[in-house]
Image (cartoon, rainbow, N blue to C red; front, side, top):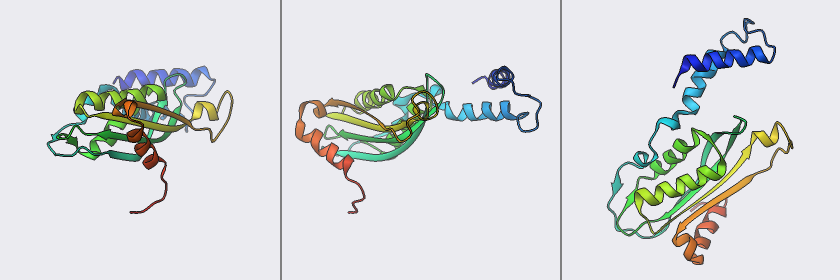
Length: 190
């Protein structure tokens, strides 16, 4: 990541909107924004397949669901944030599972790029299928987009929901329904 180039670009944007780049509160903004960008766009440099890391041999072929994974990303159209929760299910092939924290990490890798919600949903599902070769994968993402809240239509509270289903989740309505019911369940303690 070219920090100096980001600083220069932010300085130019501030000048272009008519801001005094030498004003006390603004003077360090280009450096702060460059540092922030290096963090929030760090997923660009990461290989998502490697993130899933070590796969464990385990005789298990029942549903695995990690739900309510918080994330934030930046819409590639306006460079404004969108944020929400990802719900990810997969049905292992009977002898391969992954550490559950790796699934949450996979969400972060794709979220920390200029993104579209539709794309991140597909990318997560495809990476799980390619890396774990499970019977199937399902990803449901619900998010709010600041580009809909701050500009244009200005509709706060609007949630966008996207889903991607692969393998058995496409073919078997019972498996899909089980996962969706578990995702929709709120506040239940076991």
